[in-house]
Picture 1 (cartoon, rainbow, N blue to C red):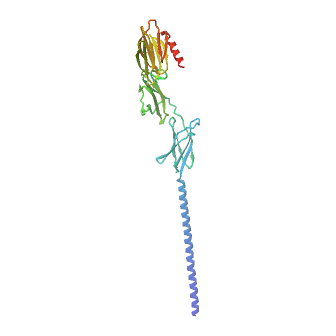
Picture 2 (picture 1 turned 90 degrees about the vertical axis):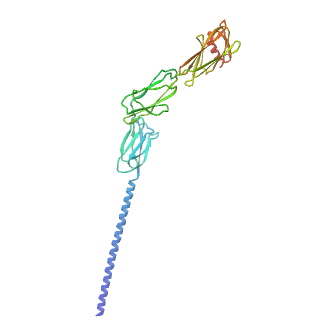
Picture 3 (picture 1 turned 90 degrees about the horizontal axis):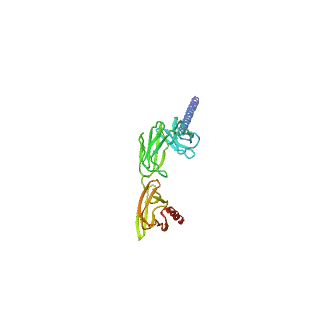
Length: 343
């Protein structure tokens, strides 16, 4: 009887043990499944983060800037606006530009191309990793030019003040001008700009039309209102010899020529630089030697000196240390002879 009870107890213990072992195995299996699922979910989240990170990488915009005839435009500014800031680049000699470090997002960005002398062109673009876009700029063709008014002398020199006004076709937003190295000034019609200072000048202007800035225009001109300065000295260097020295200077346009007259009759012309030296050997009646000096602008100054001629109207004059005997009316031939002798 006791053996039977013992066997039953043993069987029950074995069954109970197997039951608990089964429960533990099932629990471990479920825990493993949960861990696997957790790891998978973590991998998915990590992968999603990687995708988002890749999405937030920067893109770029590149292309060419040309005119309507497909000619490349150099130094055109291309600017891409986003999030209250921008990135920019300038086109090279081939018209190529490349704007980088543009954040990629699900939004449109404004790209603006501008250059002085052309209308601005803009486009709304969705920037990706390598976005391309070509800009075509149209030149601003509103006539606006300066008009110079003054007395024109020789060799392109004005011999008076120069008044400057504008001829404008079409309404402008603003017009600016600058004289030489000065600052930009706003022009208001019909004001006339007057320049009187001797020397070379550069007048520049530019304008804004419908928000677009024109190219900068310039015109050069020269003013010389002042005649040359002349000094004549007469020195007796012996009993019958007088030395006449003529010196002249014009710091603006320079000395152009000198004309010599005897009793108001032109005798000769010199184009060599001063000073001019004349030796006169004479006695007798008074004669008037007149020298007129011209600068390159056409201004002139006249100086006269009186000397004496022999009674038979003969002169011995030395020019540049060469002495010649001649009749006063043949002075031009003397000048030619002197020039030939210097060759």
